Each structure stands twice: as structure tokens, then as C-alpha cells.
Length: 500
Image 1 (spheres, rainbow, N blue to C red):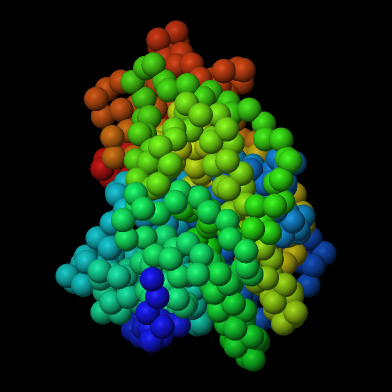
Image 2: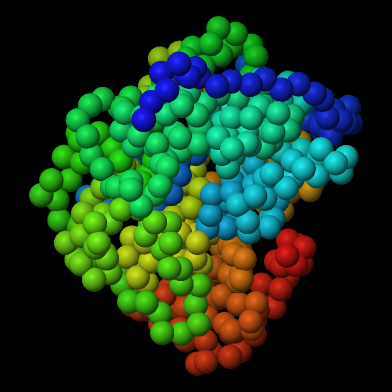
């Protein structure tokens, strides 16, 4: 279904000032931090930047760390892999909540929050009600003099608005954050249509009548991400006209989010490719955060169950892989334009997956659980003056805000629940480091060797990642002392979060 008279681009500009960063600048904090980063770069034998570093943040939806750069050889991800070779690849990055809204909330605010998809809108409502709310990451940079641009799915809704079709520009997800909010919609009519769109303008109306996966002949533009990438190229060209003005640009790629649709070229990359067996494919027999895969099962599955039909399961996995390669191609276009413009020499690039996605592990086809597959996602940071390396340190999404401040010389927000990762770029695993995540009914800690989960009901799970079973066997009853120790650590994290 198409409405050809709809505009191809929905855009919005916001204005307004916050005194948070202005006060920090007046106290000279930013200057001191910037001098620190200059000294860091000089000590590495690099020249200090002539102007503040730009930031390019690339968000990819539902992206597992199954990429060639992460040691998975059957996935075709050449552009992300090339980025990894020029920056720091974090092997053990964990999101703070396994769902789009709360995960992006932590990224954009540097704060733990409520594990609900409307967390970002609740923050906006608090601001509208006059509450004193710390500035978001893009607002922090905007108040420091950066031009801020959002394209695609960066906050919860593509474009960053509310309303029935997510195009009501009077309802803003991230107040005072962006100078320009852009969401190309093309034949998909509106941001809601693009979010779950299939080829050539097909919009999700009744999920049961929309195929769970699809492949069609055509170029990248027959799916929404092709338009998002093209708009990103236009914005880079526009920003390059004034290199003295620093920018913070965020680009949100929708695929590989459901439904799994990509041009046939990308599906053909996996023809004849043998996919490895799924680890721990059985539904847990103990009290767990198992999820019924409701979103996946809402679509047309042709009466098939991937937990019962191995051939269907393989087809689902191939179409997911095709979407990963399609998303990778869009990332490649953006990075190529950045290099063509010459802005790459002075731009920090972050590639971030908003969470993982279970492809049959624990009999789950989706996210919304606290197993490893839903919480671990890619994180790559490439910055001028920082060499290529791989870090095995456990890190969280809340760490990205303070890290970008550290790298650009802005003052690091004291309110952030995260910490800068600059000091661990070249470091080995710190065994005392933990990653904290949560869902509506449970919370978890990931250590270098174990995962501990505590349910609101009081039930607990403990998994040994040094064992062959990993998260296939709950060993909580066998190690009560370790359970008590990790429970105490988890309680401390919950206190920081506010006990929500």
C-alpha cells in the first residue's frame, strides 16, 4: 500500500538552551579535560586536533556480535570489520536492557533506567512537567557548541517523535537534543511504516499477514535503510562545508530488526553456506527469563515452528544473516562518504548494537530475556590517535556517554552511571569488572567467568562461562557462597539504578 503524495522526508529542528554544560564551561572544566586529551595524544606520538573532534554514532538494531571481526567467519560484514581494524573492538560489551527503548535510554542518557520501552518518553514527559532532568548525550554536546543531527532510528521511534504514526513533531522523544531530526520515509508513508517495512513500501498493518522474512530483487533503496543511508550521506556533505563547526551525528540503521527483509543480493551471499549448530537450543527447565518469542510469532510463519522444524530454523537464520550484511552495506556507505569528505581524520566513530537477538538459543527467537545472546552486542570505537586493539574488558552501554566526552575533551558528566573507557582501550580483562543488566522481572550481573540472575520472585540463576555448558545449566544450588557474593554486588548496582 502506498500513498505517493506523502513527503519523502520528515524533518524537525529544535531550539533551546540548558545551563548544565554552560556552567561546566564557565568553571573551566571543559578546558582542563581538553588539555588532558591533548597530553594523552601527544604521549602516543600523535598531533593534537586543530579543532574539536566530531562524533559519528552508528546504531544498529538487533545486531548480534556475529561478525567476521568478532570471529564468526560465515557472516559477510566487510565494512564493520574494516572499521574494527582501525579502532578498539570490545569483545564483551553488554547492553543494560534487552529491548530497544530502555537500551537506547541508557546509551543516550548515561543512566540506568526503567526496563520499559516508553522510558525515553517518560523522561520527555518529566521535562515537559518542569522536572529537573540531566541533559542527554546529544544535548550535552549541543550545549558545548556541536551541531547535532539524528537520522533514522536513534532513540526509540525512527525520527524521534510520538503520535499514532510516530510523525507528530509536537511530541519529541529527546527534548533539546537535536538541531536536526531526520527520518526519510519514502513509499513507507511515515516512520511507523518504515520501522517494520518490507520491500517497496509494504507496511505492517496486521502482523499475521506480513511474512516474517522476505527477499526481493532490487537495490538497497527498496527497503527503508537504503533511504536512511542516503540521507546520512547528504548530511555529511552538508556538515563538511564548515569543518570549523564540530558535529555530533547519529545514524540509526533498522535492520536486522524483524521482519527480516533484504535485497536478494544479500541473501545470495549465504547460498550454500553451512551455519553452525545453535548452542543450548532447549527451553530451560528451571525458573528463567525465557521469553515466548511473541514478536516473532506474530508474523506469518506459514504454520512452521523453528523450534520444531530445523529447515525452517535455518531459513530464519539465513534471512537474519542477509539483513546483517544489508545493514553492513549501509554502514559502509556512511563511512565511505565520511572518508571522501576528509572528515574521517577528525571524527570519532562509534558502532553500537542496541542489544543481541536469540536465534534459537534456549528455544527463543527474539530478545526480551537476560541470557547472553540478548545482552551482548557489538561495540567498536575508532578515534584519531587511538590505535587498533581488541579489549576483553566487560563494558556497558552507559559507558559510551562519558567515553565520548573524554575523547572529545568535554567535561565528563558527574551524573552518569557509566565511566570512561579511554583508560581500558589497551588494557587486559579486569576480573573485578562486571556488567549490569535488567528486565521488568529480573536483574543480572555478568562477570568475567559467570552470569548471575536474580528474579523479583527471589529465584536465582548462576551460569559458569568457563564450562562447556555455559548458560545451559543452572548451578546456583551448587555454589551458595558465590550466589551470596554476587547477590550483594547486584544489590549495589540496583541501588545505583534506584531500586526500580
